[in-house]
Image 1 (cartoon, one colour):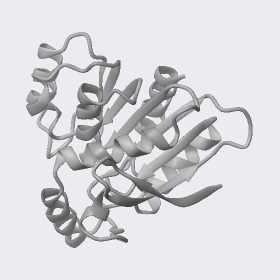
Image 2 (cartoon, helix red, strand yellow):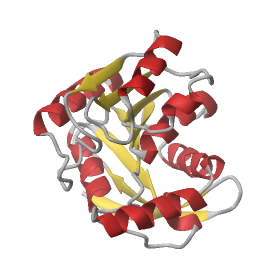
Image 3 (cartoon, helix red, strand yellow):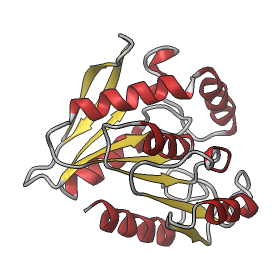
Image 4 (cartoon, one colour):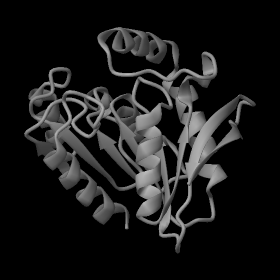
Length: 218
């Protein structure tokens, strides 16, 4: 279902991306934005899932700016390594790569950015800064609260877990208070609850969040 391809960002940087296309009619496009673990099998699985739902799904490899082929798992060592790579990657550069992905699938209909973990924060910034997307969805983005002064230009919804050790519920409440117009959904779950490769995976929360996301982007 999926294929690897090469994109070129506005600054000339070339990066790889994974693209999955539906077999039947196309409802629109989604850009799947990675966690701190690179373009790994989980992110590809998410793309395949959205393709089955009728969306052209593309995931840019945001760590290609450091070096191609960074695919991490979810061990504590990989978490440490992933944080290091994320710190080395500027948000502005990641947004250029997300924009390149949007331009690659332009013409399929409305395009939504859907991001997880680090990607959830980037989804919020994309909603604020990119003119190439129409909607955004953020899953447990740890930096959303610090960017909340910036106003989204497109509709966005946010998903958080109330057991998230890295995003205090006070930060989620601050987001709600500052942006009462943004639907914020809170699940009885931890960080990474959507990822079936993590110990924190919560099937019920993941299913409900996906249902809400599909309703929002359809």
